[in-house]
Every structure is written in structure tokens, then in C-alpha cells.
Length: 292
Image 1 (tube, rainbow, N blue to C red):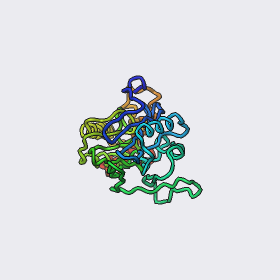
Image 2: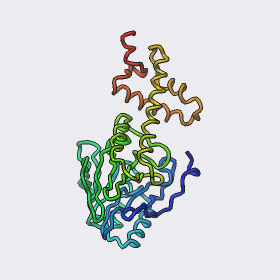
Image 3: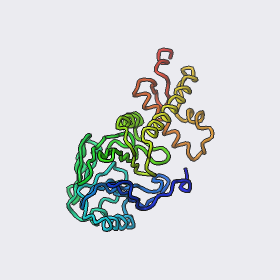
Image 4: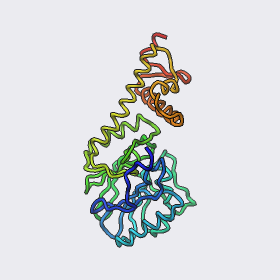
């Protein structure tokens, strides 16, 4: 997917009575039109979801202008969906621009405390199911690991909408650190049956159930293709690069390393489900072990 084919997005858009999208002004191959940050609430103080990249003064100026236009005095909370630089990188600059009085929240990446005692901005740890509120908005945190271990999505109760972070994108598909957790997180979002999804990249998703199901089915299809390759090996072990040569015949050479990482994620998920095993760098179906 090239930037030229993406849906154009306005730098600022009011999406509902309590949600304003402010683009991070950082378009790119990984960020698409740019990182979507969201001002949430209806009162003089609100909640900001994500802060864009570091060293983007034009974004901070745009955010400040929106706050002035909306007569917003500042934020009660700043909520970070995960640790990637285009979501948390702008925190220092945004904090300096909007003034004090807010709490920064992020799900921890591990049990080790992430707060730097020399940093004036303290980050509080989110928990799964926690509610973060401001006037006109109640946000419920949903821990959705997979894209990253600390990734969260957020349910806006008043609009019955999900802020999906990078778990679900407005266009294209997302990446993941752990596919097993990623699929579980997608399945966790399905029962919400929300009316809309506000992704961290790309346009608003108006058909959440269809989109989430599409993501799951795409991964299930790739998994079944990988299992078929393994079955066709007649119990001969195979390495991920050989699987890629079979499944990605029409893929440009430049993208093959990414395809191999993708295949490896699938194999690791299948290993966790006790469907395949690995010896060195070669993989085999579990039910083949007795034949070796």
C-alpha cells in the first residue's frame, strides 16, 4: 500500500460530540497518513489519547490551536496506547504546551517500574478494565497485547466506540510481536460489538465486527496455508525461508524478509498450540515426531 492510495484525512476532524481527531503530521510507510491522536470529552478539561512523535512542533502547535478553538483549558489525563515512538514520543512537548494538572497513563511493559525518577513527567500504570473519566467521557481500558505487550485499546462508553490503537488500522493490516496474543486480543474486542472503531492510523472504521472478523480470517487463512506446506513435506522438517518461497511467489524480493518474519510468528503461535515443533531452525508437524 502506497501513501498515494490512502484515504485523505483532514488534519483536524470532529468525529462525534465528544471525540476530535488531531493528526500527528507524521505520514510514512509505517504511520500511513500519520498517527491519529484523540481529544475526548465535552468539558473544559479533557482526555488526550496518544501524543504523536518527538520533534513535531507543527503537531504541538496544531493541538494547541484546537484546544484554544474548543475553549479547552487542559487535560485531566493523557492515555498512551503503547510504547512505540509515534504514540509516546511527543509526550514531553505536549506536556510543556498544555500545562500541568494531568495524569499520564500507560500499561506497563513488564513488572519492572518504568518511571525515571529524574523525569518530571510520571507515568502511572494502567490495569485491564480500569476506568479513566473526564466530563462527558468514560473510558474503559482493554489490555490487547500482541502488537506490543503493553498495548491497550479503549472503550468509550458514551459513544459505544473503541479506540483500537495499532491493533486494528483504518487501512491495511497491523504488525505484531506475538501472533498468539494478537489473535486473542482481536477475539477479546469482538464481544463489545461497538458501533465504531477509532484507529491510531487511517480513517474511522464504521463496520467494527466485519473488520475484526476480516483480520482474524486473514490470519487463519495464512495459518492454514502454512500447515498445508508442512503437511506436503511428508514429515520432512522445513525452514521458514522455504515456506516463504512457496507462499509468497509473487512478492517483491525487498518484502521477503518481512514475509519470513510473518511466517515465523505463525509458526511460534502454532508451537504454542502444540501443533508444530522446531529443531534448530526447521519446523515440523507435531504428529510427525513419532515417525522420525
